[in-house]
Length: 117
Image (cartoon, rainbow, N blue to C red):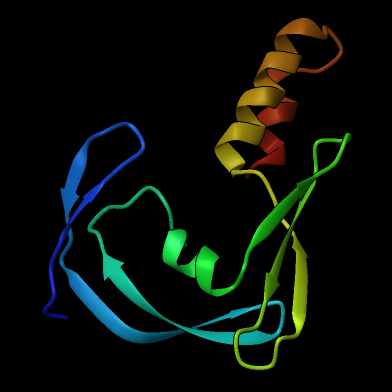
């Protein structure tokens, strides 16, 4: 890791990276991709795939009425189409469950917390 850069977040804050991992292999939907990954100390996510990855894989997201979504990508080597369901971040799901617990007297806070343990 030697190439460092400054990354700007969606909320306009900036973080310096620790460096880059070249040709990091990630597997999505059974297909291997090699990415150039910038490393950020204490990032609030495990892996953030940005615009270069979306362009390379021609990524599209389809949202459904039930709140679910699928990410569809094209393998740049084989041109195979890959479609995978996405999942919401655990903290967002927990927050929604806590809101429902306050609205529904039959759903208790302890039950909400136990679902995320």
